[in-house]
Amino acid sequence: MYPRARLDALSDAIFGVAMTLLVLDVRLPEEFRPQHAAQLLEGLRELVPKFVPYVLSFLVLGLRWLSAVQIRSRTECYGRDYAGWWLIYILLITCVPFTTIVVGRFGDLAPAIWLYAGNTALLAVLSFRLMTRTPDLEHDDQLRDRQVSLAILIASSLLAIAVSFISPRHALWAFVLNFASPQVGRWWVHKSA
Image 1 (cartoon, helix red, strand yellow):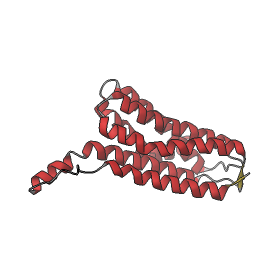
Image 2 (cartoon, rainbow, N blue to C red):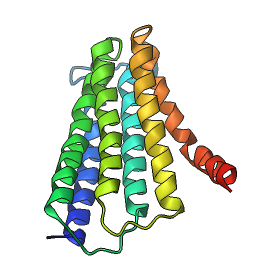
Image 3 (cartoon, rainbow, N blue to C red):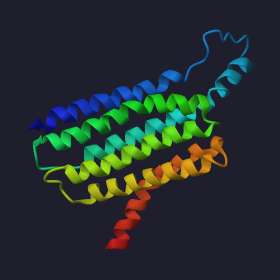
């Protein structure tokens, strides 16, 4: 058996490190030496293709962490099966900085979108799997909200992949759908009631 507190502590640390590593690729070149304000502004503008994936990845990871924190289980220990799936999930979390760097540098190429969106879709699928393996899971509004947000993450990932065949440069905008998760969750509650 694996104590839940220890797995939670490691998850928090990994999410924190992964979210911090995201920003490392958003930097001005070392040889960049602006002589006046307009050059600096131009240099900062050129960072936008790297900054957009950083912000999207930070928010996707942040939403994943927040939703994981809200899930409640009455158990204090997890079995080997859950811990194994959890390790695969954490592995995918640690891949987010890499996939963000790839999409930040090569976002106009479809394979970069596939890599990034594939990683986020797998994160969502594994999250669903972890929910099915979580002992004594409390079925409440937070669980339903997490399920809705995971479904939207999968849909936005698949949409990004589809759009990448037409316009890779615009494909990442599919992830903006994730910001609709709270509204969709509230709508679902009212629909179900």
